[in-house]
Length: 77
Ligand code: SF4
Ligand code: SF4
Picture 1 (cartoon, rainbow, N blue to C red):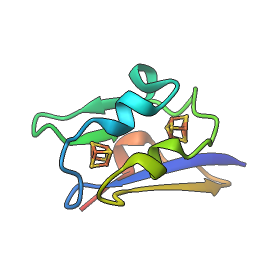
Picture 2: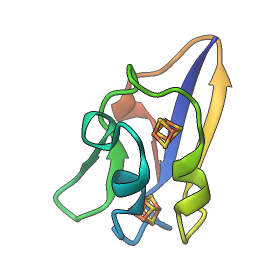
Picture 3: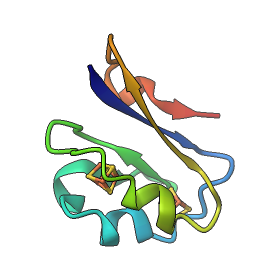
């Protein structure tokens, strides 16, 4: 069992709160060329869901899954 994080690109406003509040932010979160945030590497994620709680647009979903996808596949929209 592991974690996947899906960011809805249509909802994300690039506020950076997921990056700032995540205990492992710089290792997990990156911004793309449009300033929208996505998960770069989940290996340090411990499923605390702080990112979900701080996102003002409800753009982040954290799911427990059996077969993880690559981070690049987890950007929605
Ligand atoms: S669940 Fe916690 S550790 Fe994982 S990305 Fe979100 S804030 Fe960071
Ligand atoms: S907290 Fe939500 S809206 Fe803000 S940058 Fe992260 S995903 Fe986008």
